[in-house]
Image 1: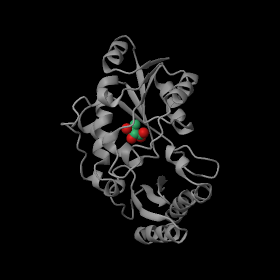
Image 2 (image 1 turned 90 degrees about the vertical axis):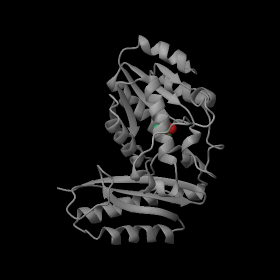
Image 3 (image 1 turned 180 degrees about the vertical axis):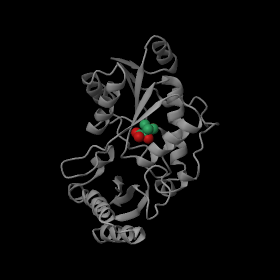
Image 4 (image 1 turned 120 degrees about the horizontal axis):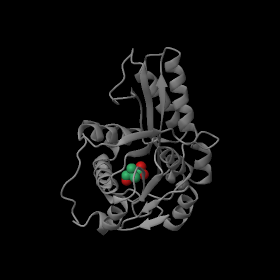
Amino acid sequence: MQIIHTVKELREWRKTAGRVAFVPTMGNLHEGHLALVREAKKRAENVVVSIFVNRLQFGQGEDFDKYPRTLSDDAAKLEGEGVAVVFAPDERELYPNVAQRYNVEPPNLQNELCGKFRPGHFRGVATVVTKLFNIVKPDAACFGKKDYQQLAVIKGFVEDLDFDIEIVPVDTGRASDGLALSSRNQYLSEAERAEAPRLYRELCAVAEAVKSGDVDYAGLEAAAAGRLKDAGWTVDYVEIRHADTLEVAHAGDKRLVVLAAARLGSTRLIDNLEIVLA
Ligand code: PAF
């Protein structure tokens, strides 16, 4: 496995690499990331994993500075998975113009759900992923469904801007108590970690109610948010949306997703659950 730090070297390697599957990450890898790598391995002999903590997608007061940087541990894990290349550029390499002058601007969706609480976040994601796609030139790229809105934004610009890349959605990895795997789980205190699976349980409760025919989506959202608040969470949103467009869901829609974001102490957790009706 090679660890490459510059765009020039990565491009040299790419010239003779054949088919490539790509997993973009911000590092601090856990089982959820390794599941993405295993999916990527099924799609191409050569897997490239990028590790880059992207300042553009962090807002004021968010955890950019404290985001764990663990390159040597990450590299050891990736070597064990048979990854061909780890691409780990520094900030000057990826953003040589200190003020990034051109950005990829997602449509209105970027101001809804998580975007409402993290202004500019999805512009930062779309911009860095576009840059990484242009550098790595993958045939396929794997993204976790845990970041459901991020996946929708990426699928959207890949389609609208004609990137010739297969986007592969990968199911959310979960701990045995249901908590979605996330680098941010390590910020939780012991008591918060014990409480955290409630978020998934609430999503399951909403999904069960919808499956059994309840179409009062606003009522279900408010009830789930209320129960989380009663248990000490600060709730950003619980929303039922159309699974493909992320538009507001209506009775009669068959493919739905319930998405939630809420804080336990200072840690913001997100999760979601797809609901397919017969
Ligand atoms: O999901 C992530 O880890 C990041 O948002 C991504 C896709 C690597 C872009 O920085």
